[in-house]
Image (cartoon, rainbow, N blue to C red; front, side, top):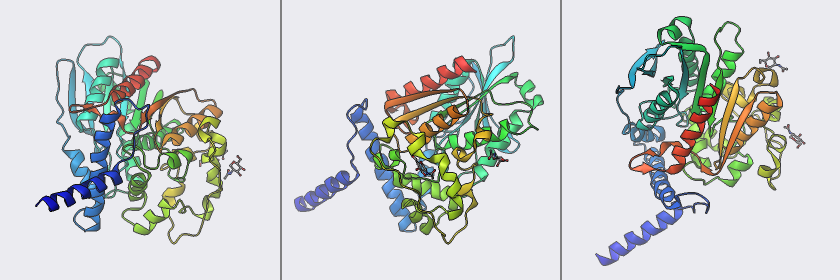
Length: 402
Ligand SMILES: *[C@@H]1O[C@H](CO)[C@@H](O)[C@H](O)[C@H]1NC(C)=O
Ligand SMILES: *[C@@H]1O[C@H](CO)[C@@H](O)[C@H](O)[C@H]1NC(C)=O
């Protein structure tokens, strides 16, 4: 008995040391971060093994966990909260109850979740959107979209575009008392890839009368053509989001469950020869400020003739950073928040450079001790102060600029 327990104990220690990666010293509440990071990595590992054993696929397993956090819409004395559909796309609408003399501002929110999970129904997104509606006295629309691997690119993009276009109609804005000149969009992580692409589409479409006034990106995903940027190299085993996990989930979005493609993305050798001209848009040796380039060496991408043809890889609706300068220059006032300890840091930093190069006004906050997904920890029992800080940063920017 004692021997068995000892073996089990040893096995456990081995396992934890395999999962455990030290948290950088300047991270606040580091013991809490560690205590959240380790179980999440264990869950992810379980998901991988369940998939290998053919029990349940990776994204489905994670999705089941996320669903435990869903909440019904509930109104209170300040807000009327309703789930409904905008042209068949599910949305949750937050309408302030107080009478307003003038039409209100509106914020459309698109959640993250690596294209594979998440919903406006999660308690955390519900509480954030409530907060925005109250703080800004704004109408808030939170959008859901088809998730991978069931729905591959471009379904999620099209769902968000459909919902936003539906909302921008005169009759809908009037119905909810929204000022058409004060509509903002906001999102986190993969939600930003969808949002950025949708905003590009809307601002450049002469058929759409009402435009977006301001856009907010929290630790955004903005490209899927290079997974070997300096931030990917430095934080490969980072807090909450590892390179391996990100690559896995993105490959589900682009390609469905295809092991060969997943392995090719892992090696960063998956882009076709015809994509050569696109790499100037993500050339970090030019677009990253020197501070972040450090002593990383830029190498030209390795392009090939892979055994698949996949248009999403070259599409700026999947990688909004691939839009050319003339498409970017019509974009609205922008807020970008990047976190240092995040493989996606450089997506955001490069977008800041590209937008500023074409004259789009950008406010950029870089959180030196920040990490990906911090917003998800604002609910008991999982509190992180960083989550609240980020929430307050983007809301106060919206309050001033929308
Ligand atoms: C990236 O920039 C470097 C200069 O820093 C240049 O030598 C290289 O050709 C560029 N590559 C691409 C694909 O734009
Ligand atoms: C930018 O892209 C758009 C859409 O693909 C295209 O119509 C336009 O010609 C491009 N502009 C430049 C300067 O390459």
